[in-house]
Length: 366
Image (tube, rainbow, N blue to C red; front, top):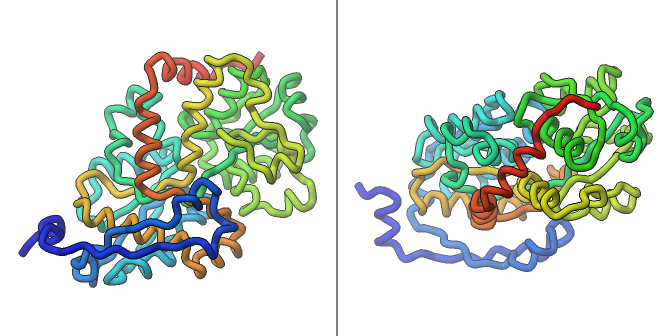
């Protein structure tokens, strides 16, 4: 019996047009421009996945933003895979998704029956962490795409005396953070080192769910590196009732929605080119804000099936309705583009990478 990759050599590929024109409002302009594309549809696809189950591994805690996104997508993904395999969702929490990424690199099956959703910090970790390089190479993962081109923020709860980013440069502000390597730790440190804020980290929170609860309880004043969509999803009342102070938006490009609210971008506070280049290394991870991938070694024909299914799911009216109900932004990027962004990120000059490492060092707050 021929393997899928061999059978494809004997099968004339069909192509199908994917149009997202009617869903234009939910797509970033740059993505929309290339949204009409021809995607291979191997004839063996229906036979290959018929009767199979795909395990969808989520490297975040249940109820968190990454978990909510992945489950909304998993609910519809199987409908777009020929053969309609079952999708079983599992959480593997630990080390800011590094545990899940390590599992995908070292133990996951290479037959297309396991895919993962991880924090982008896990994709960047081997670039900035010598130990991370020993675990896995993110450029070898085979990306299906990302569901969101994310914007992160630094925010404080309404009871905090730190109401603006300028306040954060003047007074110590207690901020919740996960363990080392997580965005909540990294982005607070980056702000301190490159812009002179005085964020004092309280580390050890498992994820955004726990960090947001700590803000509400008064254990801490705020959190940095928090996905804007996480606040919208988990605490929409904070926004409506003005219970939260959004200090700064942290992303490569500004988010018009936040700019209209008067929230400045971090670029206003980073003055020299070396610091800007270092920050770009860190913030590039937000271009693939919610990445989904298969491990290395999955046959190219099977990866093509999964990539097409992901792209189709991102334009599925039922999925978009689910996302709207859950208050999720859908701003996708396809797998090939995510693959290139990751490869380009790892191609940065060594001096730029070293500057980025220094920008993320956690130092005592003055």
